[in-house]
Length: 454
Image (cartoon, rainbow, N blue to C red; front, side, top):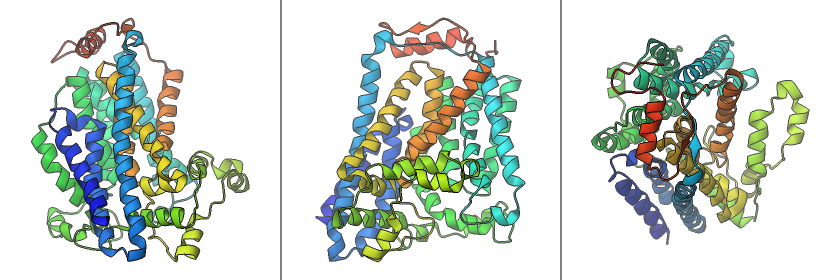
């Protein structure tokens, strides 16, 4: 049963990637990309965990595999539900195309906020920056700093669509925030955000797709890089100061030896998930949403403003780590996540798939609206794609926690700065998606190569 459950999951992920890539633009759709995440990150870790499970743990390993498969299938269910929901409501579908100047103004404002956070973090004491676990004002600044992805997508989109000097300046400002994160600090999230923003901006602004051959060969390379990030960071910081490794140093890394296929130390996250499943089943312990509530309070209620006592009072005392240690004699690795699968199962058992259904439903709605020319839907889809892909590797409420920040930043900027429109409402009454996109382009001043900003 252990082998059967594992290969069912592996086969389902593989088929989803194959069928998704059959469409030229399939790699832009969330189900295809998340299937690649499951195949390149979840499955290798499960393969290693499966080698080490004892007879007692095998029952819970099967449960973990089946629940992971249920989560994966739920993503496709939610996506199709969201896509069909928007298509059924097409007679009432309408939106206004924001002006170039309105988008540019919002892009610069959000970029300025990100730069303020970046400068603020750089002014913190070096000892605080080098701590393994950040706390206090530093965590707040880093969290707000994440709005940089909004300006990144808007800058690429505007630069491709209008090719104006101002859009190039915005692009340079946004890219300058990402270059050190990717080439020096090797932040996985920054890498994913750069990839998703570039390919989606190219698609939504120019309707150009990246040749699938690059995507196919890029998937295994991405897997090796993800598991080799620790080694890359060690090289970058070996002198005590962070600096970009040389090509010779990178070539000297044996990336394959760092994957779960070659070492048993590369699968701490799914091991955590296994023990969370065991805790839930063996001891009938579920948190019933309290864990997600704690994530919201931890992220959005600053102890510096309300006081640590009030913040702790607002959170539930779940004691999951203590239960794992006292009842199962297990202490997880420092820095390893619980994964969305382990976290969701601890919350609601098999009903925890609701997190994945809801996330995919929202992404499906944004995808359809974005392809009909809705710039804000395109922005939300592009900015939300990275958290959606990272969610299986993080925790169950991760996507929603991040999108609260992005939504607040976008709607806040629109409220205070305004978003003038260039044309009247586009109504979806009997008009197909392609004509909507063309109508949106015409109304926003787009005339093809060499178009100028209004």
